[in-house]
Length: 291
Length: 291
Image 1 (spheres, chains in turn orange, blue):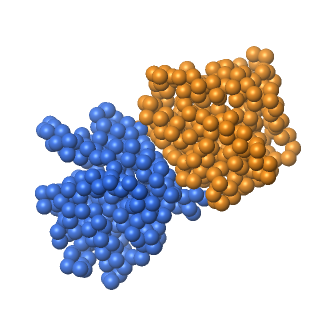
Image 2: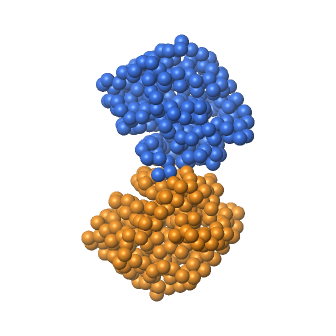
Image 3: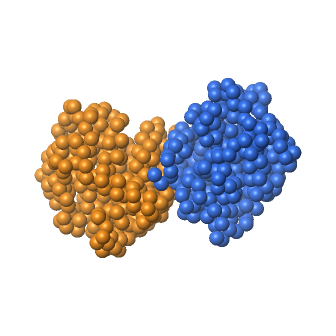
């Protein structure tokens, strides 16, 4: 176990923090760490195809104002070594290895999309390690996904400056405008940017996400095993992983709060970043979700 | 039109503010006003059978920390004169008369249960008057209600110190404990307490609520007419007006945010008062619900 070097990192932002590396079990994980030295760290679990620089600085930096926040590349992703697995269970094991390498014994998880599936798997299996859970734009095992159809449609829009505009935002002017602002924020960092992912990452990730949704879990075993306070978030018009997934997860989880945002798609947390950060802070700071 | 006398009321609480009266159109309305002199006033629309003192001081006083908040008895209720109507449309007209009498031309509305039906009706008809809308534990026109069955069950629990314990809270120890704390807060005020309501109020109110839910609105005309940013809130296990109503309203409203709380019933806003106040403030302070 390696202790986390946190000296002098308080003022760093997602755009300025150095990328750090930690190695164990044959994998060298790339990560950035923001925020104060004390407090329960919030670990960010990224979406399909995303790397550390695909997070929104407006979300990450604001959350890091009063808690340690750690963004990382899971095995094989971005500048982490190793193979990207083709299943959620193995991604969860890799993420837990990373958390263990940092020497952390209690964390909060924020999982977005595929990262939300990984977060569910970790929380279900590691009741002591995970204090609170935030699931955004994600699906339960056996949930509803339209990944291939929507990806195909998005990549066919050759006039879109970035596939995330049609994938993460609705076609309303307000949402598209928020999308452009989000993309701009993600491109501020110039030096030491993370590596874009190719098909060695996205092919197994797509298989993992589609398999997760295609695998029935009639007894909701994963959701029923999650005892941690959970905040479930979705956009009103998520075309990849519809908001009905969020409502279904809320109903099966033993201690969940549900927040759905207006006129928003898969990237609701980036579009409504101000409200999202406020909601996450309120949730993480509550003594308990039922207090 | 009578101007509101707000001098020196800044430090008042729901428990200490004097009950005031304002008269027009043959009705003398009882009300209390809290909070600063400036800002968009938040008008509270109360549940079936409730009076001004049935609001939770923990919610009302915290909301009044940074905005004017006005609790009142609608026509016939508590210490207001006039007849309690047996339909939501007439209740909405009475409430608008009250707001007009105060000389207010732009307000936010927080409607709880039956008050949420009244708030929907007002917002749908008065696009200019209502800036933002908060709907808690309520139903759309044509929605699902189990009022009579649940009331009968609650009043048959003769060992419950107050029917609101089984009606507003779940049977979990945490929820029941929150319920007792809520009841205690509502009983702090001794002098100048509001008058309890008898059947001259509750009979027409029950008819209004049941009729509202029994009247189909296949085109969702009321919800579609609401253009204001709306926050929809419900408890996970509301036995009178189930959370499915909240999800259904969220899907039909053009600009709504949905928040559902864990392990909570009809009185989710009182059980989770700290989170609820934080969520309402975040919602009311947002530049727009899609910003």
